[in-house]
Image (cartoon, protein in one colour):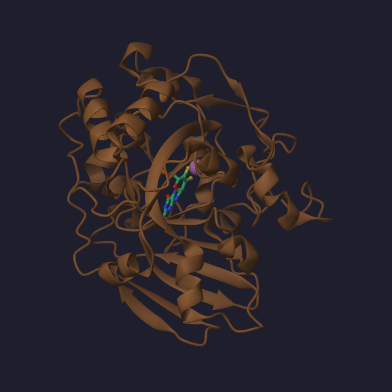
Length: 332
Ligand SMILES: Nc1nc2c(c(=O)[nH]1)N[C@H]1C(S)=C(S)[C@@H](COP(=O)(O)O)O[C@H]1N2
Ligand SMILES: [Mo]
């Protein structure tokens, strides 16, 4: 991103957690299946990973879907990556959320106490049924699912995160995009009193993002309201953020207050910041280097070596058809 936020090996070094603290993915699955609930899994996880003072546990989410613990089915759909989970402690203490600070390891403290009471999302634009939904309304739209996705930041670090949320498609179904609709635009809250980083000009505020309508309707595209079975902590985008696992992390806009269906491609914050560095599509592609660094490999947080980055972040079989016949190096 900007020079301050460029990937730095030293930052990551400081974040490395001893391997012994990690809950092995296989153990996790066995526990999940044996106990039949994410709750039990979480208890085991927590025992291995004490939470530092600054990062309080959130409220447990009720009603996370457990029924479909058919692992093969989830893997086949792309809903479950079999890599080891990134420990919750790393996910909630290493963040990009410029509305609070550009210092990744200070976001959690800066965002602590961010008040999301009475939150709502307004959905408008080219839809038959525009509406404003409370968090309760959102929760009524579809059962909360667990999705274990790879997350690949454009800065070349990555994680594996167990999100809880609903498909964005469930929301779009309710508002019914008009036939002329082609894109979906997203907006983060603008409130410099609650988001002190908005008093700086590091980005134009509010943070905005966008997807093509078919991308937004893809079953992998998630409106996340939780992680590790708890409400999203502020630093990860409380109370509701987007997760698009085949795209670079900056597409995953946090703390969303407005979703607008449009006919024209909407502006996006990082593209406005530097159009040659951050395209609208931002599909993870190891063959298209960022102008200032390679995207061929990544640092999985908590691992020592680097991994090869996968085309579409490993979701190629699920999403490549969305881009048939398009030149992904030009239309990046
Ligand atoms: N509103 C908003 N959304 C945002 C950002 C941001 O600064 N502001 N950062 C993005 C970037 S660059 C990344 S990598 C992810 C990080 O999500 P995480 O902190 O939950 O891992 O959030 C994305 N969403
Ligand atoms: Mo990012």
